[in-house]
Length: 224
Image (cartoon, helix red, strand yellow):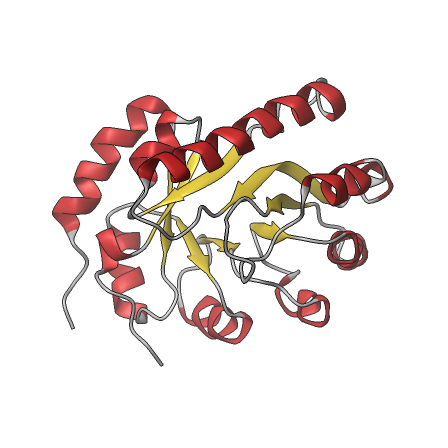
């Protein structure tokens, strides 16, 4: 098993930190020792896609890790991660927002969330369309314990960089509109989570505040 690419991680930090862009290390499928190695370099923000894998890792790794859930989240799984999750990036329905609020309220917690918007050509990707997004936002104030801090999107998996740029640009414009319309009094509505290992530079140029980096740091994904 290759270790964490420390040099690549250091270069990413040097490139992104001056621009105020956070690195979310996507640790899904990667072993505990890789996460621990990155933790010992000072990194704290890790992203997981699967509830069971996240629960297992959370129990075995340092308590001050900030766990981000970035995969499709079923409403019946919210209860399992609500006690400790730092941020949920993949809120793609009003029902899920309501469920996060319900469990967070019981726990007397505020759980930061991002609304996932469908910007890609692939129909298999999850996310709200613009109409549904606006319908959700009209009611978001009823669910304060699910605290919306921004938007997330995944671009089409393509080598066409202009297509990727167009999708990211669209989401940034939508983000700015929503901030003005719904969150103009909230300084903490500021996260635009776009960009992964293969397209993060385009995402940063188009306004990303957080990039989800897996393979550049950890190497190729390990399949179960």
